[in-house]
Length: 252
Length: 252
DNA sequence: GTAAACCCTCACGCAACGTGAGGGTCAAGA
DNA sequence: TCTTGACCCTCACGTTGCGTGAGGGTTTAC
Image (cartoon, rainbow over all chains, first blue to last red; front, side, top):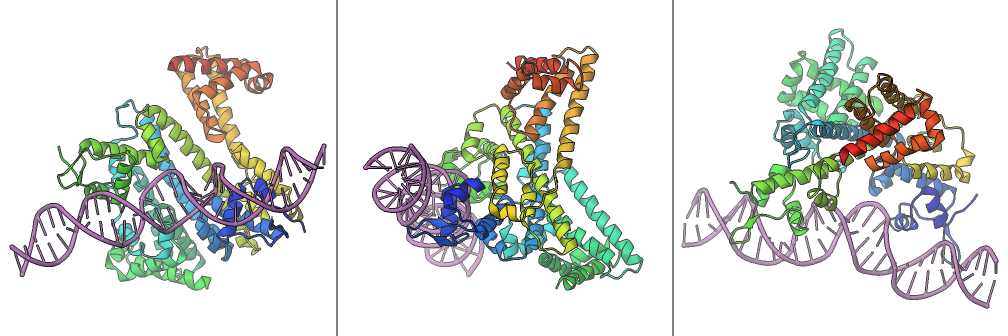
């Protein structure tokens, strides 16, 4: 059982003593003991906790989110974090693509990085998927959404094409299952449900299973969703909705 | 010549009025005029400037950096920004891969998630940032880690493989040019020089043309570099070195 | 025995705005 | 004309995650 001073731990972790003080003050990581003269003393458990904290921080969680995550299921946290990281990657890739074209284009006018598509994108002039806008709207009030509410990235035409085809693919495969008579709770369908959730998480917003469940309900209760989805295959909306509901039952 | 109020511009750009006020106060974007009653009025030039500002912000520049960038060479700014974005993508991709691995592993075994190894694995032994590599090192020496220290599998083997193949590819193509008799200053060679620089920027550190030039000199003056590069093709180190030097002459 | 190297607790500063408070301004409708 | 609601204005304090001293004890090494 070894113990460390603030300085020890700070240099080990590559952070400053001030950061340790800060984590102590906000109650995120308090030393397990103090010396008679008031020096902070951390033990191995504290080290472990700090490691976890720093991991979450690296993943982009705020300190309050980290505090919550420490009391929750690590797997859930990691899943959420990964979805977030993936969306971040998509966003950066989009930016990088535009930067590259801007750089290789001869047009070095006064306004940099601004292809006409960019200008539209920045000002959100193109019309994004109506349904997602609706969804985002509805969920904008929930805490779950607020937490990870980053601006929705602006996708290019080719991005949208890609997203569309990915989406169509999921619908198509799901329709095949449905027509083959597989129950909505079957493992095959459940895999597609998870893929569907990840699809939304990756391209739109952080779709937790709970939010996904809310979406699923709307697929049957909101006719705009229903008709949109049933355009691929009649009855698919209901099937998907049922499958999503089943996935939740499965978890609990 | 149209003019807009703060609210107009804010809603157009998808930002808040407060943000506009802020940009005004810090002198980043002040309205070109005011009404008699003090309302801010922005003209088309202001709109253009705001667009550029938001683009830079999107690229991750701070507002002070943005202010500087507005007065500088757009191309240089974009190049630096892109390198930064690319490195960021690499970092996130690495994290995402490891998160996926952690998730599927724990999911299958049912083992408690987020062991010490997991946490190290998320960032692992590949980290473009030298500093954090040292930090990881120091972590590994704590008692807490030693206790539970089983060897962490090298998740980054595939990363390195990828980097190696990318590097080899550049060398190979450059060697072809050399053997075909193309001068080091030829456009084809220069394209590869740029690709080489970007390769380094993407995987290792921010390699400015100046740093690149320094590297190029070492390729001939430091035998360790020379022999390593000449392993692909004898004389390649000198050729690459010359090509890099030529790229600098070209710029000035 | 003293100097260097730690540690402590305030407490203000920074970025980039969010969020009211308290109060004018402007076009539209009763 | 008068009021209502949707704008606009200027303070000015709150937030996050610390940085950076200020002023002052404590420990350790020579």
